[in-house]
Image (cartoon, rainbow, N blue to C red; front, side, top):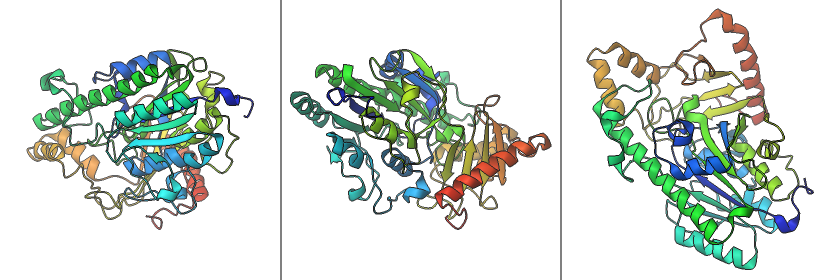
Length: 426
């Protein structure tokens, strides 16, 4: 790898991450949100269509990115949690290569010795003044840097952005949500906050331009796990685990290109290390996808994995562990504690209660959606190509018995490799 980047060309690395944003809602992914800055970035770089993280919650997701480890191995699998002592992160890998490694905005990680970043502010959103100081100083001293700009948007409560852009009666709701006035009002405010996040992306891109850093910067924009409506965040459905990923790297990444390779958040750390000219990190769960970025291949891995733990989340079921594996076509979900009711912050939210009210009033479709969210079978299987929203569970169909068996074996192997003992781990 050392030959990939000569020292004088070490790129600046900028990762901008949203908070609770379902990928399908972004403009360039076919969504209703107005996202001109993200859309422009996609036209200048590569848009990934199958990027996944290993946990549909804020804290494990961030540990995922910075450590290159899956949640049980790092120790950070419940939500408000921390990595095991002795775990290393991108700060440890990039600082010896001469990089300043900084974070501005939402943290949700620990302990400090695992993440010895330069913390640019205590705010929950990127501090543009501090980011400009970093860009200015590094440009003046010709110092390479890696910045994590971590937004708090569009995490609820949805109270930022211009909602007038999104008239409630014109929204198209996904079919897994019950159409109620409360759901529509929340959804429009959520979309407005996505546009607010897009403006943050635009501000950071403008600062890179201002300090003539754009041409030698790898910019990665992520949407993070799904939104906090039902069937997204806190679940192991694709709506909860899939992320938007857009990468611009002038001269390396082809403009206006698309990657269909399966990649995961654990792959980001080794990718950044390789881009910075470092040697491969054998101890990580992730693997560099630089070859996908530069267009050498459009295949990275055969399987992506996920884990959900309700312990430590607001209003969470005492124990409702979920594990999942996905290949090119199918997603298998294993609900370890399927006998109990599934609860989280969503089930106590006003929009979910409005869905319950419609169900209780006799609407059969609403009743079925509410039931499906609260009560899960032990196994769920979805054909992600034919059924991208994962609405039809194929697990009871005998013709998929071999598919289930094959994927369950892969899931068991992954859990064993992670030291994940399922219910015991929960």
